[in-house]
Length: 169
Image 1 (cartoon, helix red, strand yellow):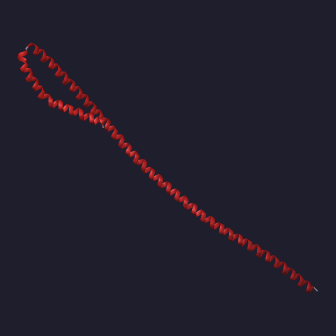
Image 2: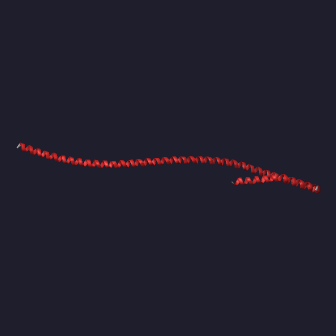
Image 3: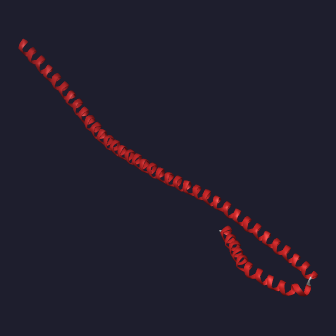
């Protein structure tokens, strides 16, 4: 009887152990399945993370390239601005010289014109006093003035035209 009881207990314990074993095997199976799913999910996350890191690296590289190109453009524009500023200063100085030259030529022309008018008045007065004698003299004198002044006037006219053309630029 004890033997039978021992066998019964043994069978009961064996059944109980077998049931627990099946539960544990099932639990292990579920946990392994979860582990596999989590590993698969982790693999996907790692792939997504690697892709995101690659995109971030590309964006940073693109930003750095843009900044470098932008810095080069800004530097180039600064150089051009400095060149233009220097050119403007040179042009202003040149314009001032030309303006002074034009004023000089205009003053010279005015002096020359005033001189010619004064001489003409003086000649006319003298002609009135000595008409016959001075007619020949005046003709010769005016011819000489014409010969002397024509090249100068022509050159002054050319200078004025050239200066006006330079001012128009």
